[in-house]
Length: 383
Image (cartoon, rainbow, N blue to C red; front, side):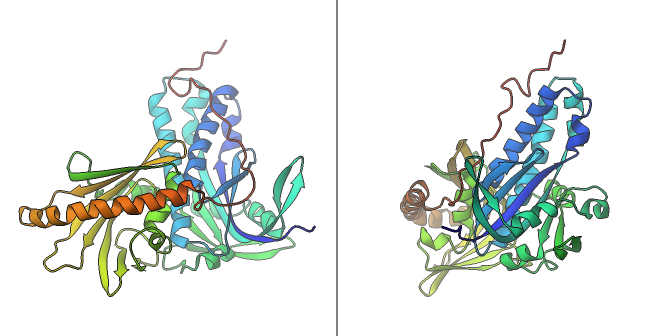
């Protein structure tokens, strides 16, 4: 039987400076560094993406989908890049090793290429591989002129097909128009996100987080599902009504991208709970201002924190900010009912995610190489 074509979003995460980094460095520690940071990137991208395979200094991911949540895809890519940069910084600060590999790890950077198209499953060397014109195209887009245009800065390149599948206005979201010409295929219109600029903005932004110690109340849950999957069900308007007590969620994002400033109307019949996003860090936490459809109701500030409890498991903390003295009675009145409602909703979500409803289908994933257990705290001793 002939393989049936499927639509998918393809993402390649490619480590820049890899060849130069390996030249003249201690290979065992260099391997540890690459394995460690690549593990960080993979954990930020799956789910919703699945790891198809490793390709030297790159990892090839895909998600079977006809359409893509544009905010979700960009959040996943940028969260992976931010995690990569933080991990390199943390390794550098933690290790006492003075080997060449450890001293030069800051030369590494990361770029992403994203495309949407079709693939078929093809059996090769005892396992299924992705094949097809679009699989070739996304790999050919790795060789591009974006680095020269941005002066060697990190970036995410989105093909026009990916932009269409996301259904976004790329110019309104600050992406730069770009074009690549590939032999046989021809001109491929693209759009580019400067990830170095995004990283700088993320470091400079104001944090609005209700900490555990400063909260008036903390409601906690555990779900045996990865943080990106849990985050999706908490934030995407098409997924929230599947488990929360809302008929629909009407989202008004700024510039068409979900994040700080987004306003949600969670519809309950003719009534609406109005949420405004005050802070947004996928997949770590978000902070909301919530206004209930009740006379005299004050805005309630809550942070939803998502903490990796173990590989593939998430600990959720809903931290309610301390109210003004005049609003304490209202919070006491609605607090018990909210706790009861959210507990029932989380139980439903837990059944969905732990039962496999939230897991993407596809090929068996590639195995992630593990760094040596000594890394990064112990120095490398060479003979």
